[in-house]
Length: 142
Image (cartoon, rainbow, N blue to C red; front, side, top):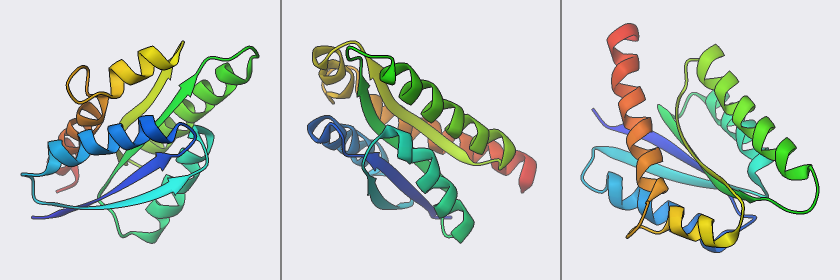
């Protein structure tokens, strides 16, 4: 059975997000899935767009992608914490299968290492997590 998966991508660090998306695409190339991508301005907006998409009933699972790099203010802490909390709330309260691929790093070098498909490939990890949660949800929901 084909799954319809939405990739919700923050465009704030576009070059990093594009590499994460490529990791997702490679990981799911052999799977029976249909992917759709929607772009939002930053990581803070990712939970909101996933909630809107979930209301549509069009998707089976979601992959949240983006990057937050620590800056000179506490803004980093709020964006990281609130985007993660928002996604966890959706996963728990609405039983959504969400693969978490929002990088939270100290600098661009760390972000590039985590996004790079030849190194840590966190896009792939988020895609696999989404698929695994879809399989597990099927055990309980049918």
